[in-house]
Image (cartoon, rainbow, N blue to C red; front, side, top):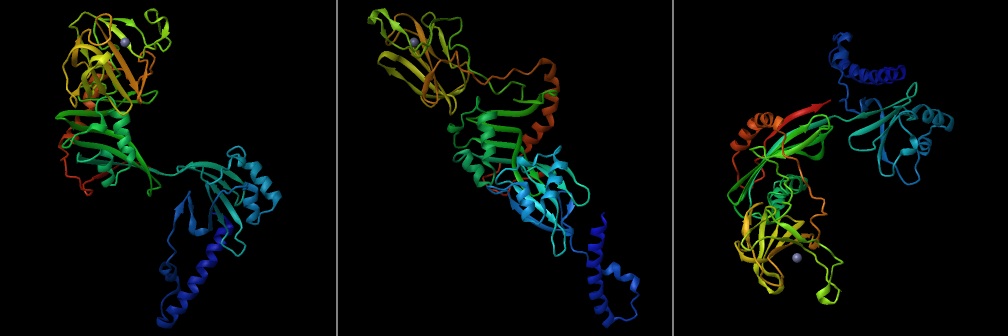
Length: 434
Ligand SMILES: [Zn+2]
């Protein structure tokens, strides 16, 4: 503790002591003076950035347009030679030119009439802060605010959209995005959840400094009962060096499956996606081919290339018998010229399910399936699409994985599915660094 601060605290105590002594003096003359110190109530200490804020006059502001470190200190009555030496000595830790407009800063100033700045604290983000301390000698360092992770659970029954349900429960939309776009993108189409589907999620929320909510940190495990089929997902670290996490189901199967390479087994590609295709029969006129043709004998089964919901199943002109499937909010696939269709609109199909058979219906010169791949409503070449693809879990990790998920699955299974009230969350503090 520096001398100046001791002196300040000393004078403060003296004032309180005098007041107390005069009060006590009136009532109890025989009270021994030595005990007075214990009676004094010190103002409540508030710690932030590693300082006791009650030792200072605290001035908070944000960096404004045109502001610089020098201008901020100058406004607060520090002269330029001093500013220059502060900037110079802090340089190795923090380049003062990196102050960004809109970011908060705090000045800890002396508790006297001059209110001289003693310390400049800059927050480039919610977690980090840079301290430039010039109370005595000048030193600067970067530090982090304490982070707390709290494990929470949420369950529910689908009545409307999942984001609406979670919103009613006061849960961040980030959780919906994590479930729909990261974890279940290839197994459940969140735009087609059905009434009566249910879910359970174990996730962690992140807090900075105990109080600032910093959003959903991660989903530890999830369960969806979708169309009476269970879909589990467990987060597991597959690479401890690169810190890579992946989600697998209860049988260690990966959830982020890519599309099957072809909708027909043992087929050959007879015509690729080609926007510049010209056909002799039409006098070499430009006839773009926006599909990929897979030739196979009539009657060969045609497979859904990924999980999804059938959105079209009918006969139409040049397409002949065809089926269209929506897989998620981004991708759809379409299968043309079928001899016969096996699925109906609204039907949920899994990757590899037979949806029809190879035929020659519609506009076609030979038995094949014209496979069309839609991304955001536009036809693209599936052979050129960079599709999210995860590796299946390594055999060497499988036992460890199954052991790892055992207690988590037990917890998940034992969670009661509650109606959509918002008072059901239970919370457990799982880690904290202070
Ligand atoms: Zn085609």
